[in-house]
Length: 301
Image (cartoon, rainbow, N blue to C red; front, side):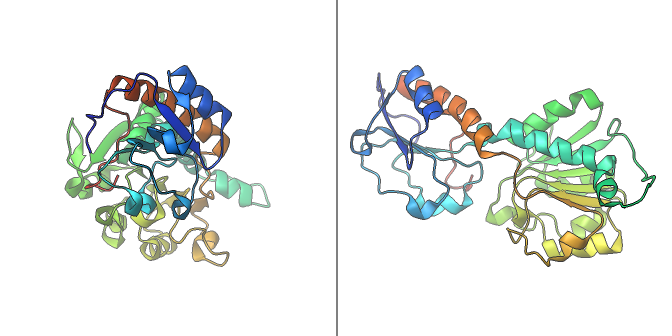
């Protein structure tokens, strides 16, 4: 289904599997009405488990999902209605986390935290760095904005290479130039192990890999080997493959790895930003306008 749905002056929106005050206020402020699923024209789904997703009545013409990555939801999606992701809600907070990981790496925060004696780690500034950002959707785009005060060179890599970006098949050109390689692309069959042994080998020996997308975009075995060999400077990861990362996994022991447990967008922050996205989309839905963050069923994101 495209975006040409019938206009509804006061759309009925169901919120599930639990109610949320901020989301419901966003719906009513935008001119909608919160109602039961049986009468709903739209559904805002806040649950994290796709297996608990309900059967939808034909009246539902738009579904808002709670996550930026939708790979685990694809078998629930159909072409009878519009499906939207929460990419915009994830953009700013995840970009902030990526910047935090970058700053922590250049200032060797992990080394300092682990040390039990006074040390002098080789810190360097972020200013003047070259940053390759793979994926310039909501997260990558927000990160570009956050990097502006640091006077860095940004090399943006996207699937098709539009608007001055490099297409993904030219990623090998960007890797040797970059002080940081930031992964912010969606998880699809085409992006699985986008960063493997060859890509890691092409990176500079002082460069850091930063992943705030999905762990499957990086070949974990190849990353462990590169860290052990010192062929890259380090890795700062909010996502891993497997996830959760097992307690005895070698990534935990790598001195040049900085790992956070998939906390780039805390639940409290997500609901606040998601409420803003829902408000805008309810207003658009009521006017019959295209919605933000529509999911492309063919592309898988």
